[in-house]
Image (cartoon, rainbow, N blue to C red; front, side, top):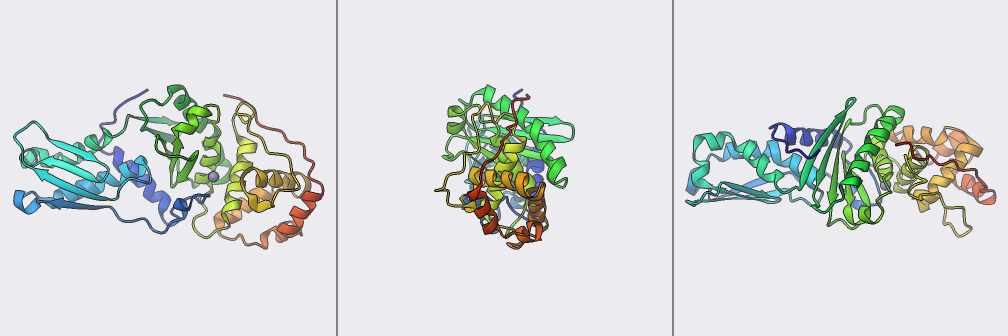
Length: 343
Ligand SMILES: [Zn+2]
């Protein structure tokens, strides 16, 4: 399953998928402000000592722009965008080293015409060495690039995340947004302290969390729905985006039962629909069952079309959101049917 990609276009594709997702709507909304930031900084390459070593920096720049944005997109949101390149002259065997934010090349090696011409491939290979493994899996018109940054990551969890993606993601795209990308990147990260988060077409998984809760594969369903949502900036509040993602996880998750994930019973102390996530998801299921079937899916559509407003609830149901929540609070009983394991 583990294979090194030597294809020159690999990082270019990673980058293209990211650009397609981020224009004009850069990222999926969520609880993390990172996903709602403004336009990302550009990628820049500063070559030190270029004049001294008489290297053609135009060629270096072209290769950098073809490769590094894709690497950074797949690597993680902390990956540095401003890169410094140092050219050193050494007689040693050293050729090229590239880590996030820094490239070091042997000027003697680089001055050979052949090496400069192949610089894009060399840079891609050097950057890829920062990753423990990269798998590209394709199936029925969908692809998943799995970038693993944690050498201790359990391969069984990886396998289960991949199969969950291919089971649930195409289904969500088909049901809710056939314009959503078919190319998704999974990244596992040891440093990330949360659970998972989505930005553009990349889902970042915290390996600490996954090690502790290996059965929670429907994180893929929740985060995958964020890609499918693709609402863009300024289209509805974050609690709504998160509530819908958990509502979809409730309805389409492959193994909510196995991971002991459930929608908690209504409690009088619940703050309201803005509590987000599972509290909101249960309220949405109540709306679907007791008020108007299909209404939440309609709300999802309007968020994507940017036709959603706070009045949409009243337009669709005859009641404001606050009235709906008051009705729900008064009579929250609900028969919940969870999806079960079908892998
Ligand atoms: Zn979310």
